[in-house]
Image 1: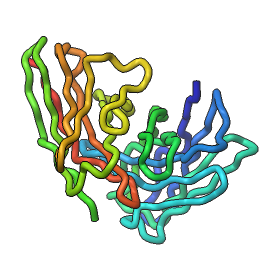
Image 2: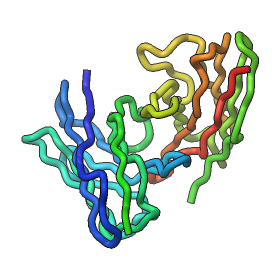
Image 3: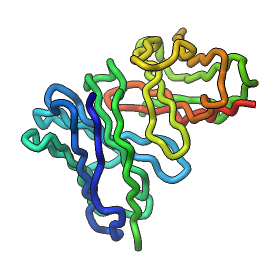
Length: 120
Length: 105
């Protein structure tokens, strides 16, 4: 059974870069789409983007050029970088697995989430 | 950009049937997925591709789609079903509905 665990700093200063890693255990990172989703306090879910094991990415246009994702198949990890953060980027960040990159399957495994607070 | 509309809240008496709608243009041509999120927890996939239940999800959860509306139905509602439910589709990117808070009376 695949499990996901997010890790990274819980506090980031405004204008700096948010960096998170998701570690995949209990299965291979290959052949799946790995998503980042965030949830601001008291609000709904917002998709940030996904990365395929080959490195192919698809980002939410709302994040324009601020987002970058990478994958390290040797470590079974994938990562998120979000630059020039503001208080609006304060949220719980989740990683999640999807068997499809075109909405066929739904995200069937989620990490527990990690809270990131942007401080001024 | 594509939008999914959900009612902010739905209330249902214990043991009755809850129905949560999700509206979107041409929704019938898309695969709709539903997630349940309890307070302080990560979302859980409860219905995928309109009407399919993942392993471990009770048969009380079912999904249906007709026209521009997808519906999540929860039969014989239990107190433990209280949560926020999100619908989700793919429209060149992942799109989530705003979420519906289910209250069990």
